[in-house]
Length: 600
Image 1 (cartoon, helix red, strand yellow):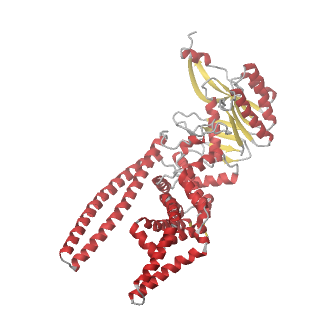
Image 2 (cartoon, rainbow, N blue to C red):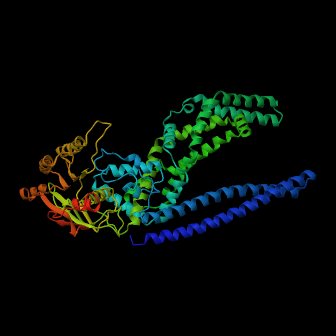
Image 3 (tube, rainbow, N blue to C red):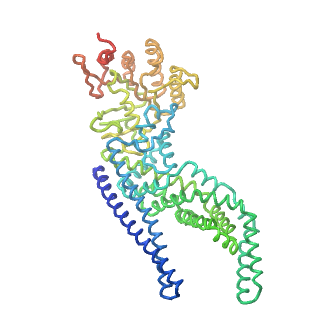
């Protein structure tokens, strides 16, 4: 993708949409004025007609009334357009703020925080200021859920990862399409209850369509009524027969009124959400795609040569028609002549039987596109990032790797490499020298890589593996569990996975913190020695310099690296650069003196 400064594009878009919003607002003012004038003209024409009939006045009256209705419809349409333009303006304003690392406006995914997860809690994937919040541009509930599941449970499949990369690359330059898709999604927020109600309605068995009696009477009774009406007009029968047939239709409507009201209430409540899904599907169906993932997803929106958009449009028409019964006069007339309630329910049943089974799949397809919009937006905003290469050469080989949530002007990048499984890097360093941040940098970029997204690096090559971390173990009052026991449980979980022959990359920060230093040193040594034997690879950060001695015993399996700190007359300077070897300087005492904890 050719590099374009995204902030310049967003700033220009804000101006364009701001001007367009002003233009639409001025049109709305004109429409309001003309609508008022046509209404006054129509009222005046009616007054003149009452005083004395004139064909010309009648024609003018009809024309004015038609113009008044047209202007009402036009006003509604322009209002929707104004809302859409304002949403587009806000989307671009939010992206400008996000480029400055102010992304608090987006959903943080706090509900997905899980301390027991293999890596999510340690890597700050969810919550305020999280990776999820930085990535998330989803506009649907199913999209938000799917993005979270992607991050929590990456697919270790080379083909799928590369297909996802292709999809992200294709959608990234489609800025106008993506932002219009987002604005459409934002126009009608979808709650968890909305989706549940739709799926519950679809799963309910049909009642009327499975009974031949209702299928027949909905045709026969209206047909008989119109025949009787015709015969009455031509003098064949008395009008009372037509009245009796109409009353019979109203009788059937009344005995099914409770069931009819319940059905109509269910579908009408979700009409706006269905319309929103329809508009989102239209955006997908009208766009051309080349990436295999996107082509495959788009094909999911076709069933028996019928597009999902057409099916949704048909459902919306049925519900709109059903809602005419809410007008008492129209409802009375339609049920007396056409058995309208039963007719609409039968049409809904037919739609449910033909397409209901596909609704969840169509919602999932919308969610997939929603997620791809987020991933592509991430790439568009970070066009200098690279797409990872999956290779058998190295377990992990990176150059100029940085944390994507740290601004470029403050970010310090590092090179790093692990060639084979059973190799473990021991990292030492002073407090605040960068050990934990480096572990999170590795972990977050691995999660991005496994999700088919670009990573914050100049080069990134890796093998497919499961990621496990141990960095923020906490005790649990609820489970009556001590800190040390919670940590042991997490380490045991890693051991169990290794014994199950899983390829595992571990990120461990100061293991066995919950015990005394002697016990910690012995336990740490035995643990890293054991996971090496089981085939683990990864990084262990520690303050325990004794653990670094393990390199002498297993030079092919362990390597020492460090983050060093420069100390000059009690002044501390960090460069956050990863070096070979063991750290030489510690800074706890100096930091305590600087904070005034003690003076000597």
